Length: 127
Image (cartoon, rainbow, N blue to C red; front, side, top):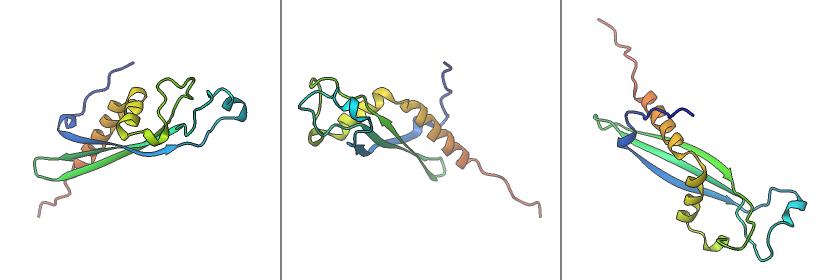
């Protein structure tokens, strides 16, 4: 796997990581629900999230780009380490995301999109 090239503005871009939704509807067939351990309720099956990049250039122009995505979660196989829906925090959920999702790739994409917006086309005329 090739290592992506870090965009030139990456270190000066601020990123916000936001959990935007938690889906508790079981997307699996009825047969699979029987494999969920007894006592587990309010299980989160899918997380929706956004990453927002904010960059201010040397002329004090601010550029903002956002990527939104979603990811499915593994069905819990035991009650060990299970967190009930009402006890979840954004930090807990974000840790699930960052362990499974290519966050740096998303942040690099945001920076590259900002760079494209920053590049100006010289449309001046000589007279």
